[in-house]
Length: 261
Image (cartoon, rainbow, N blue to C red; front, side, top):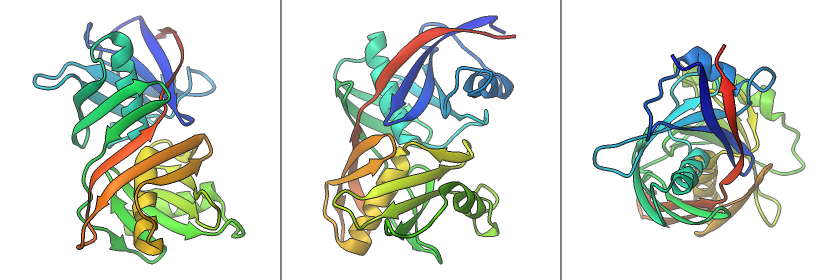
């Protein structure tokens, strides 16, 4: 096992990740080491860790882990961050096609403030007791609120995430306020087990929910705690969605060396 590892810290609207280059050197990390690196008290601190690996028929592969050390499903903000990281490493220029946990994705890197990531098509949604449920590469429940409503993202999100209705794997939970000019989204993320400053796949789910419930047309701009995200999509008569693009920043915060104890 490596005694030390070079890392790069990125964030996409406050959703932060540790990026590691395994394209040029094979890197393997145990779940325990990933937990340690992501720990905000005793490590670098991040919502997740992403390893950029080689892929036979694509530009690269996105190997994503939540901060609990377990492999994660698709992460939209993390997807933009790894595109920015691949650009930084010189692996891609402007356009890329890469492999992620939920399949193949396309992306365009314009600059660190604007990266467009194509998300997976959404074939359907479900009306659940508390809101609308989508699979946008990761499972998401979207609950519509107004800014006057009282809700606790952590406690209510955690209760729903671990409820029997979503066992055994749980779900991400999004609270979406719709009474302002720019809708606001608040997300409890499984794997992080806390509220995060932003969630890309959650923002996609929320924008589709707004289209269904409020007839808001594409593109949709959402405000998260960490900033703005823009989602565009094509709507079909059977309530399915295609050509879904998530646009936002991916910022390189700092780089360093982590000592593996």
